[in-house]
Length: 154
Ligand SMILES: O=c1[nH]c(NC[C@H](O)[C@H](O)[C@H](O)CO)c([N+](=O)[O-])c(=O)[nH]1
Image (cartoon, rainbow, N blue to C red; front, side, top):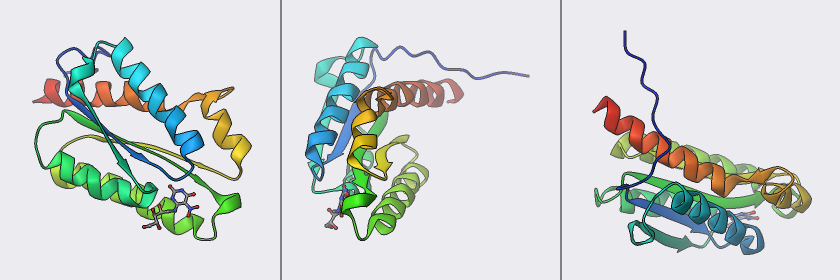
């Protein structure tokens, strides 16, 4: 039988990035990583739209609005939730994760979960371009793969 495995080439793809402003010190780095990953894999700068929302909780809502335009091959959700500074850490994380998965499934547009969820600021910094890489960059690669995979399966 067939094996579907997509290329990581982003030419001709249209991508939207939804990024939470909360913990902007981190999320701006995630966005930089995502844009870097998209462009260096061939996505045209003019084919990348970015929407800023207040925080991770709002990412799914705007991701859904963008998905319903049918203009994008994939959407990347970026944010940072740090338990140390959040009393309602679990709610924000759970609703953001559940919401993002739900948008994918209800709109048939791949939405990548690029929300950094950590115990403390140091761990968040590690995932935004230091020793654990950049989760925004990784999300960009996953977005390209999922968009191409969906096109392969048709
Ligand atoms: O993205 C985040 N939003 C956070 N809260 C805001 C939330 O995402 C909504 O923007 C807010 O509740 C208004 O709806 C966070 N904390 O509460 O700490 C957080 O750590 N990260």
